[in-house]
Length: 406
Image (tube, rainbow, N blue to C red):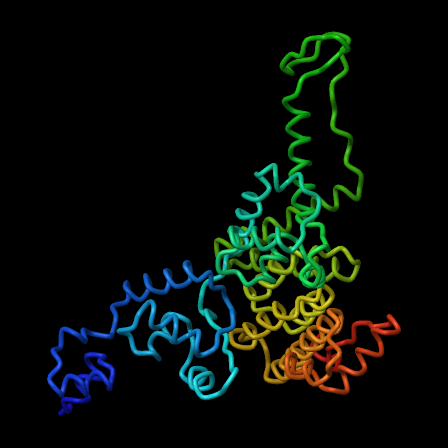
């Protein structure tokens, strides 16, 4: 038999402090059900994300969470709001509630755009002449595009997958408002190539002083406009593009036949080869990662992907995808997971060191402040300072010395 208090708080979802008020004579209409039906929760979540411009993996502290809770769903229990609206678990909620200046990640269950959706965003950007014709952008322009097209994507994902800007370049333009960087280089080239092909197909033949006419059969004596024969390098590039397109189609349609899986595996091997040859594009990283998830690839592919992320300084992106494999890849042995966890820990620490580098580059010299802000060790911060002074800072391997599982 449920007590009145448990019925009110557990079944009806009334906050305990409100139950006390009810017991003292306040009418129930003032404290309607705090347990929200699923459609309403979804609407509240969408409204919070849209109006507050929240993103996957954003950080939040308790005062901010409390503010959102009171603004959007004061009748929900706080832990329900944290869990259902912001994807914050009870442990994380307790941590930010009880610790000063503590933060936690939010919206980690929010779906991120897939490869095809990202391609639609890229095409939408490239269709605008005022974007397509701009060669370089500063951080102000980046923020404007991110606000308009980024959706729930974290900043690093939008930068890399949509605009083809590496984390290193993004950090550079963030640090100085005068700095600019190239963006959508491949996207613009592909757009121009398609435009050129269309022009060759549909354009007119022009002789000096002759009125343009639609292209049809050439008149006698006229030379036709012919596309140059592909060189072996172009043919190879075309072959790689077709393989990539097939892999994307297979993954988007969830085709799991042996031949489909084999095609995706071939694409992974091509990504490995491209990286070794210095030909891997930044916007290939997401497809590379999705292919690994799709076929539940072996550790060697995950490590190759991690190396590629590190080369582009995409530490957060790398860590997230390693987590996904640790949680859901049934082809990884216990030893594989131990090694990948070690790689992930080192990647995360490399990110801390990168943040320290950014602070030092901005002119921060207080070691204690850098330690507190980044979590990097004092010895490493001092080492970075010395190496930056002599301009010899180089990337260090984050991989454990082990050749097994490759």
